[in-house]
Image (cartoon, rainbow, N blue to C red; front, side, top):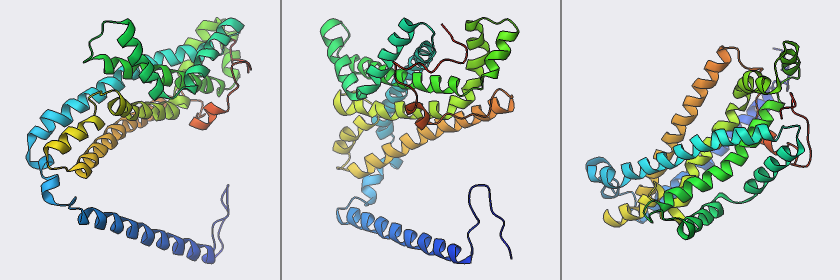
Length: 304
């Protein structure tokens, strides 16, 4: 029986299919051996005993005292960072497309500066600044520092996502807007930004997931009471069940990010069904390929 070639590659023949099947089986066997080795090591150290895991199923105090308050702090910090970073990133991204060199250069300098600094260092600097120059309570200072670091770093990354999304649109969109007499600001607000949302959405969601995960840095270095920071007191009070605590916290992070990506997928489908997309998609790699602050690639509409 003849096989039909696809657009990108030829359909594998019988020998290639047998080879692929063999490699798949070998990989599954290797994976099973690794899993067995890990479980055997945990069992040897008594980490798989039911007494280590039982508190999460039988003792509500674990959730009421440690996990739920920590989850609330994680969601609070991530939510505040998202709410502030998204509009700030959009403003910086649009400013980087300005025809005015001062606006374009200033926005580019801010974006490149904060993109180059690790988010943990931004959190530490923010914490020191709040301690030195403000009267913020030491109890709430870690939250302010975490949110500040997340906003400064992620707004600069989101600015590049927005810029990439706008540049991915065909120039005909701008030409059509000019033909009906729309001004530059109107073209950006009513034509380019709405149509670029679906193109930007995959990269935006990836960065929002990064925001959720990076809240753990505040718990590790600043004493912020988020999910990761709850592991130590839980383990100390429930029989040194460190592996169980880390596992439960990891599962909560997975569920939290899965809910975020599921909502984004639903929103993307709704936007595409509404015919507001050009079909372009901006991935994380496209952001890194954009010009540096000194290079102006020319916005689709020459937004000031």
